[in-house]
Amino acid sequence: MPRTVPLFLVVLVIVAASGLPAIAQTSNATLNASVNGLARLSLSSAAISFPDADPDAVPSIQAAPGAINVTVKARTLPGGTVTLTVVANGPLRSGIDTIPASNITWGATGALGSATGHLSAAVPQVVGSWSASGIRTGTQTFFFRNLWSYATGTYTLTMTYTLSAA
Amino acid sequence: MKKAVWSGIVAGGFLLLGASSVFAQQTAGASVAVTATVNAKAKLTLGLAAVTFADADPDVTPLYTSAPISIDVKARTTAGSNVTLTVLATQDLTSGSDVIAINTLTWAASGTGFTGSGSNNKTTAQTLGQWTGSGSPSGSHTLSLPNLWSYATGTYTATLNYTLTAP
Image 1 (tube, each protein chain N blue to C red):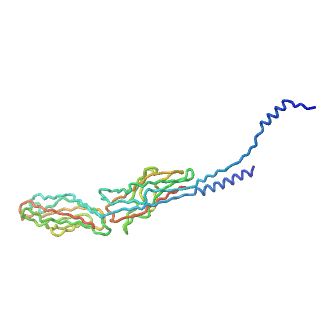
Image 2: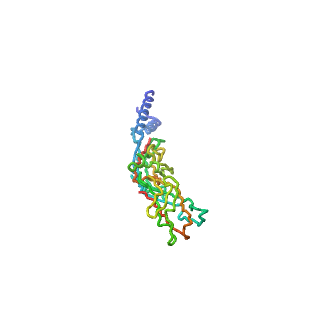
Image 3: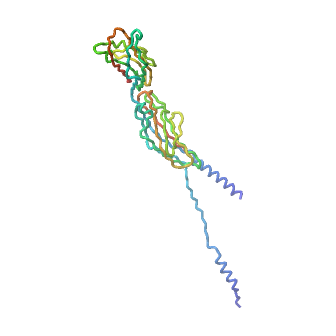
């Protein structure tokens, strides 16, 4: 005698079967993006010059070219400090004659701020200082104190810029 | 559970160590050559362009003396070179055919490097001042002329040329 399957049991089985999960597989993929510290400095000119001029007519000689474009790119820790400094390798020198490097002054614009400063052969001077990573651009315009007391000659020095990101 | 916590701490430590090395201070540099040209120059400025001695009684005013004439010297030269200021008269003091010898017109100068006193000359430039190297000295001088009864009447003139030399 065949056994009768109650209808509610059939329905229960069907409902239960429809609730079974499909076969599932999970997998993790790890993405590593390395962002290392980096500092890059670009100057629009590798040389500037101050032409001769009458000290009475031009007491402060502007350098040629008129301005140096400075581009600073830095990656650093959040809140890290990015600093651009400049230092002279010595006084302006023409043979044995010298003119103090401090007689060269500058004015800045853009991301370098509106600060002015003077060159030093002893202590690196801060041209700009920022927090965190980023790209900053600005210009620096140089001036030379034109005094009667200078001995004649062609004077030279080298300015070294250092960008540090820490 | 404990093991998992410690594993996390260790992993975090490695991560921090890794981060500090990756973000060690980075530097970049660049250089700019600077040139300044300083050429020789000389500039002379006198406080007066003309000196006039008004007529006076020789007994009352035996010596004409001018007001001080300022002299500003500005010179750029090679280190150790001499900067020289000279004065040369174009002629004697002349009024028509009458003359007063220019060497009777004397000067007295004050200021560093200036010759304290001297007489004018129409043939040989007289040194009024001398300095070494670049600079901008200044001083003054007065001109004097004896007021003699022997002079013929007239208006006497001469020109004094000042020359500043900076080699």
